[in-house]
Length: 259
Image (cartoon, rainbow, N blue to C red; front, side, top):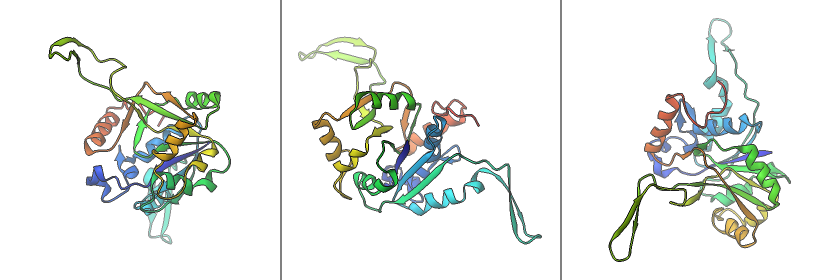
């Protein structure tokens, strides 16, 4: 099953770094968060990726073109015909297609543009700015079991403080700890779709999270898979620093693979 990664937005909320590179190329532990996401899928044997690029798309293409330079020791031998020797070459089992889906194209339009690369088969899709320890095989099996067009992963982004029960009369009724019922379930990506999904997208101006998903909801063609482990997006510099701190601790929850 191919993995589609949305990586074309401007990343304006983390402009400290996205002014120079696409947000998926912002680094955690000296490697782009895009690489971390791909390593998650690759851990489960999913190694064919289609990247929906847009803003500064050349940065993504150049990074993959120079992958050995980023991951290996290199000898530049100027005395012997200007040779470059790659040592301890590490090869990922990946096939990566980077598609320029346009600078101002909306999320639905980006997906529509990579239809021919996906083909007439189910595919996975996620956002290029968040990591988690999602059980991908379990997600896929759940998707296969219900027969609907789409499955999205959801996460309870609830309260992290104590909760007050209050009455309309102004009295505090009780203090209690937070529970799984507090807060909102949010779409965290890590989605699975049948190829019929493409029929729900009109064109470049379509926002995937609006009309296409709402139509699936209305037709009872969208199910959700609840993720109860770790998940974190990287919308802000503070969130980037939080992810960096977890990585440096050697206990990053999304790092399932071996070095």
